[in-house]
Image (cartoon, rainbow, N blue to C red; front, side):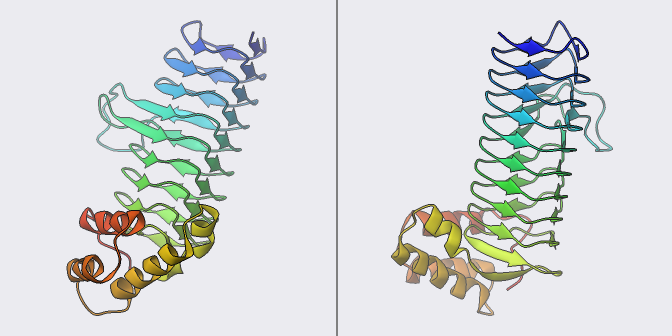
Length: 258
């Protein structure tokens, strides 16, 4: 049985799961779904189009499903989809998507620290940490196991690959490939992320292959396309190397500086 404060405003049309705790002064609109075992702390607003999975904790002052800050938005029905077991700390804003049927997606087991803003149509994977005051613009993609230090700004339409790390205060408008450390203004490649690869139990030999791939990419004067061909030709094949090559093939914004 759920515990819903009589000081909360929860629409009778909202779907509330089992064992949900909703504290005073929470506001929940009509077209909302909240899964089992969630905890919604005071002064949280959960707006139309929000679908929240099991076991999430959403802290004070957060707004889930806020209208997209996009001039092309015309009031279409769109969604925010949040997976299970995320921790969403104070004053986090997550916008729903811009266009009819669109989705802003947060995966599972992510930590969004105080003051994070995730804009419309962005897709975030699993096991990520978004540090204090980080701002993610619209139509971005973030993989799995990514760490954003505090006050990172990711500009619209860019991607961050699996197990990458962005250092504090970084702003970027190009793609950050998987397993890379990047930082500075302007942003630059700072090495392969051995700590996270080791944490995710990626073998030492594979970590060396990743480092070799990035030596070819970031320490040559060749184009990204030519570097990609060199990686395929010179670095032993494996899941992580294929992930890097695929990421490079699919870039639209370009890759961060060497």
